[in-house]
Image 1 (cartoon, helix red, strand yellow):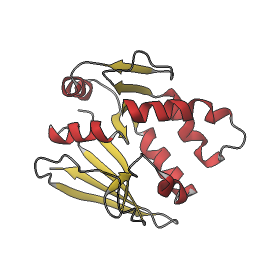
Image 2 (image 1 turned 180 degrees about the vertical axis):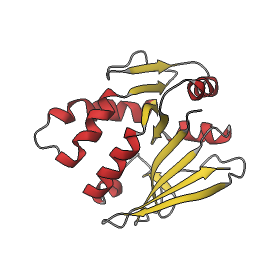
Image 3 (image 1 turned 45 degrees about the horizontal axis):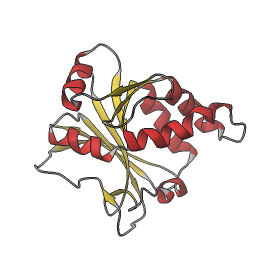
Image 4 (image 1 turned 180 degrees about the horizontal axis):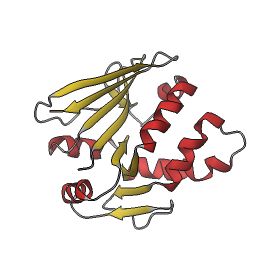
Amino acid sequence: MRKLIVSMNVTLDGFMSGPDCELDWHFEAWSADMARELSAQLQATDTILLGRITYQAMAHYWPSRSQDLSFPREDLAFAEMMNKHRKIVFSKTLDEASWNNTIVCRGSVIAKIRELKQQPGRDIIVYGSGQLVNKLMADNLIDVYTLWLHPVAIGKGKPLFKKLRRRISVSAQSVTQFSSGVLALSYHSR
């Protein structure tokens, strides 16, 4: 069965973004070794799941990156995969998807995820998309949590575990330290 992986940037105080979705703290710590690790993670998958808000931000950003001559070369492989991978955006309000290889899903998130996990293929990954991740946590559908822990506290914002209604037990799988001080902490669900 395919695994569902959540890959999320978080601050030391547990926020995935600032109160208005700010990610400046994330970009400040970006490094070439993080780009390589993120590309390797994405290469092991073939499907990206997104909520509407994250989808719209990424659909605005990624399509032109692989042709942008000022775009960092170490991020090029990641940009190409982002554009080529199948993307499923969960939204009740989005009418159509402009980013190539994107399907808008209006039905049951849980039913769709269970269906996807049973299909052949590589693993499935979720980037950002806090509301979607909270729904997946509530229904115990996440197999791997990769938390990119940034060495910064922002004091307020959107917490990763905002709507946690039950205890989640995980086992530590790996820790990778990057030159910027960011740690990639990988946990498998029990």
